[in-house]
Image (cartoon, rainbow, N blue to C red; front, side, top):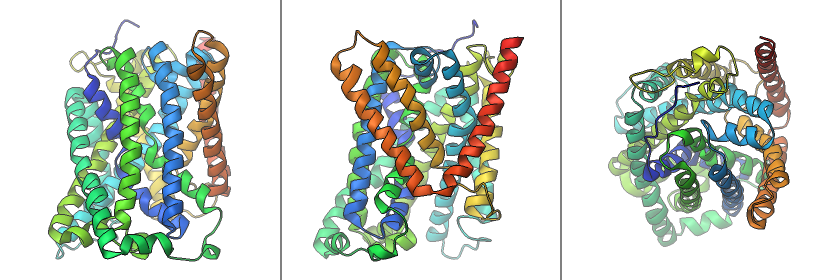
Length: 459
């Protein structure tokens, strides 16, 4: 295929994309979830953040070395194809296009809308909204608007999307840095931090399942997203040097910010308040209603930046398959708009699939209209699946790349393997029967991909 994406992103933008895609709603959204799963056990929560961060970093380092060697149109698909083979590369691309990216993007758009409603109701106490902030019609309508907005920026003006990503990355650092520093100081002076560390909100006997495994599984959502940056490796200037740098620098920044932010939040509210109301209560407790609401607005901007970054990866998925003449209608999804140099048709497909996943998430996880079988958390389980799909890539990297030094060929990939297996085990323990329902849906979607692939090979 002669149509190619232009190289338009530099190192700073690439770092901002790594940090901006990962840091967003997860650190605000899942911090409360981790407290709930641990019953307010702060040391266990911090341990979960550390374990999740280490797993992310070793995988990130390993894949950054792959980024130096393999380069085509979509990093993860490239790595799967080069190490395991073309068919595995196709299935990886099909999975990311139809489950992984759209599933996460839909949830992130909803979280962005929810935090927008939290900001509005807090800033304007007299504002009356129908329904709850998480499931009311205003939130749902705003979710759909945010999805369309992210799609529009990434398909109609990719340079604007890049600038938006850079700007939101800088802005989102403000509430995180302030809470990490001031929350720590206030917590020490007031004694709240010490109290939270020694007094869980509930006793261990009241917590269902394994709290550490469930918490590490929750951190997967907050830490996930770094691999999305590899989807634009064909658009990064001097990507063989800049993509690994962006991944490594960005990963270190992410892990440090998450851990210190989590500790800072513990200084701004009691464990029970954080479990019941989330991190926003810590902002208003420490900074007051006015400044606290301004910082909550920054949280909204942070979430929007993450949604934009996820949509950035989402819109390129079908193009990555079409560039290999794979998937349905490669001549359609491989087309680049002559004015924007973007795969517009691939973006339309991404928007439709993302909307379908949001409908599922709304019915099962938000409104809980459907409570029967096939109910699972589509924000976490696809992430765990991708850790499972990393395993053949890591094993084949160790088997094939005989010219790599020991650290790159064996040490880091083995650590990444162990971390990925840990994530899978944590998922099974943490989600239980939900894993079975998800795997059935996963199998059906992948079977459809196999039928499409078979049809292409016959034609």
